Image (cartoon, rainbow, N blue to C red):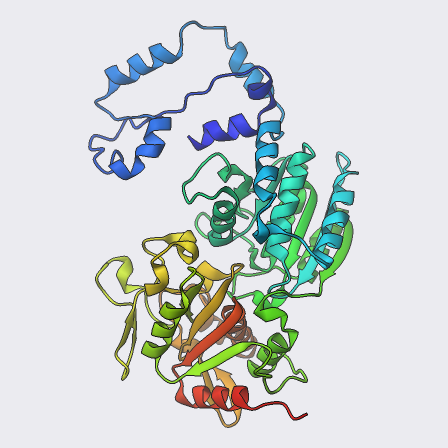
Length: 489
C-alpha cells in the first residue's frame, strides 16, 4: 500500500499518464495468516489485498482482473523513467491542511528563517549543495517551521521531505496535519534519518531535518551508513538542519554545529546560519529556561532562583499525588506524565507487569511504549501511562508531569548525576561501562551531560506548567526551596 502511495504521490509518469496502481501482498511462505488478516488491519487489506501460500488460485484471479492485456513493458518503463517530483494534488492537499490550523502559524523570527529557506530553495543548482543551519532552544518553533517549509516546498514543485531520527515527531506532526492517526498517503513525506544510505547525489531537492542533534553515525539495527549528517547533505540540493545541542540525550547523538560545518565543507556546500531566539513554550518565559539550565548545572546563568509569576512550576512530595494532578489537568488532552528512563520495560513482554514502582508511596505505572507507540502523546486515555525521552522529544503539551529518577540527585550543595541508576533496557548510555575502562574522565563527562540534557528536555515540554517529583528526597527538597523563593525587588 505504501509503495503504491509513494508512486502516486511522487512519480511524474504515474500522474501524467494516469497509470492505475493496485498494490497487493503475496506471502508465499506464510500458511497461517490469522494475525495478518485480523480485523484491525482491514483498512489496509482493503487497499492492498493479502494472499497467503494456499491462495494461489485467488492470487491468479486477482491478477487476471487487474491485468487485461500486456503492453510489452511500456508502462513499467514509463514508471522506471518517471522523475521523483510531488504531484500537484499532493502538494495542494498539504498546503490546504496548514491553512487555518493555528498549531502551524508562523510568527516573528520563524517567518524570517522561513523566507530565507525559500530564497535558498529558489536558486538550487544541479551538482551543488546548500546547507541552512538553524539553531534554537526548546519552544522556538523549530518543528512548526519545518512542517511549514515542507508544505511550501512541495507547493513549489520540489521533491522535499521532513526528516527526524525519532519516530514520535514524524508520527505526531503527520497526524496533526492530516487529522488522522492512521497511516495514509502522506506518510511518505515524513521519513527517518537512516533513509539516505546509498542515495544518489542530490536526489532530493530539499531535506528538512528536525531534531538534528539526534542524528547518528550508523543506523541502530543494520549498522549501515557512515554518518547521517554526511548522507543527508549528499542526498539533497538543500539541507535545512534544526539544531539544539543541549538536547543530545544518548551516546549515539552526533548532531552539532561542528559536525554540520565539517560535512558541509566536505561536500563544498554553501553554508548559511540562522537563529530562532524567541521561545513560545513555557509561557514564553526565557527566565524559566535560564533557571532550568542553572538548576540542572548545564550552564551558569543569572537565574539561580525561579520567578513564580513567570511559569507554573511545582514540586510534589508524592508521585501518586503528582499523577492525580496530571489527570485533573488533562481536561483538553493536554497533560501527560514522563520520567527519566530509570525503570526497566517489564511490560514489553509481560503486559500486566508494572514498569515504574516507587516506594514507599506505592506508585505503580507502565511505560507508554508497548501499545500506542509514537502517537502516545496525543491519544486519549494515555494519561495513565508514562512517557520517556524517546517518545516526547520535539513535542509539547500544556502541562507536563516529570518524575526525576534516581539518576539525578543533590549532594553537598550540588546537583549530581548517577549513570548507573539508568535502566538496563535504556540504550542512551550504552557503552558506559566499557568506556570507563578506556577513558573514565571523558565517559563520565559525556554521561553527565546526557542525563542533565534529558531532564532539561523533559522539563521544557510544557507550554504552561511543569510539575515534578524527585525520587531523591534531597533533590526534591532543594528544588522546592529554590522554586518557591521570590526574586528580590
